[in-house]
Image (cartoon, one colour):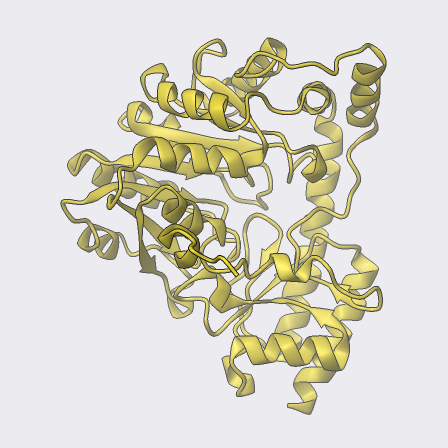
Length: 382
């Protein structure tokens, strides 16, 4: 069989998450990072209305002006960061496309991009797809997954093009402090680096502040902001994200988007417009419920004897299972086989995650209770 694949294809590791999408019905899945809520009624109705009105054709490549304006207004009112909706907002097929466009527009073959691990599984893959080299800077459970800015600086070489940040963090739930963000921004200025800031979970924080990176004037002109509607608005299947950057930076991603995609899904854009304009109360209700589940997961894991760094954002917990005597992959596999609970092995998120597993609490409270009972039973057997 013909198999002369590119070196890029060979270098990319299979996703640690995707294999948990298709699991038997008797398994409780705490693996996939997808809200269990359906999209809100105004969102769904806007999509249906767009279909009935014949809005089934291409939009401008950057997306419908109304949604670009709404995203711009949201960023301005929430974080005080200003983007021209006509030239500095690009609507994409989820934040995943935005991520690829950002790294592909920045990196030449062999350029390095720093990623702080554990991190979302797509970061390294996107960099490799863009012919770049991911340089991993691990954080440690023992330090609360706090970022060692000195270690980040030590990883910078003449080939370093930028730093890829993702906060609130998938998988750890860490929310970077204003001081840490300021220090990382200082490195970008000092070494003339770009910043890609993935802020898809920006609205899912619990009692702490999310710091929007490009709101810092010192790095605004060197930052690409990634966001989207999948998480806070429960719109994963609509596949709508966005990329925001100064016009000089936007030129590259915009041209690549034209050739790769042409335009994000038209109906989904109108649904997202309703979501961002009409569903603030629904978002707050979902965040409150995630917070309730977060407390359940944290309390029960502590009772079970699995130590963890208390998550402050997103909807993940990242407990350490080292004390069970099993590595994370064996733990996850045996838990799935013996107790019908699906988790993600922490090693899939890069160095620093090898002693942990990721639990998504974006599932019904009652199912979480059942899953935690099963986890407790499994750990007691060990």
